Image (cartoon, rainbow, N blue to C red):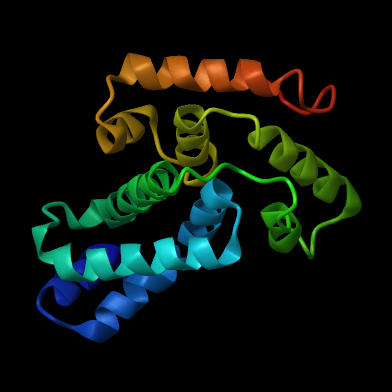
Length: 177
């Protein structure tokens, strides 16, 4: 079903439509939260808080077509707030999210994903956010700028700096311009 129609139904109180909307973004939201906090339970808590917040504030969404960006923005800010409030840092002993995500992929893809996951741990959170939004959520520079309330030039700059930081960490030849 069309996202815009689902959002409009959900805004009128249709819980089934809201559940269908969440179903379209569920996996990406959880993975994004996990990539920030590196803990399954904390990621689930952030995910659930985001769903609750989206449910209670869905009527304020003015552009139904931007539901995915809107809820992702909420989740990213909740994740960052969680890290700041609890003074938690990304740990290296948690089970790797990419290992879970790629269980059915071939060996080469697994190696690439694990390299990326390791490299991701060293990124500053502002760079991690723009990388996730750009390459994982497939958002445009303009959409990312809107979500983060940054000028487009800042988003481009953060993307370039993140790539520069990732380049020496990743296996040779993985990152392509």
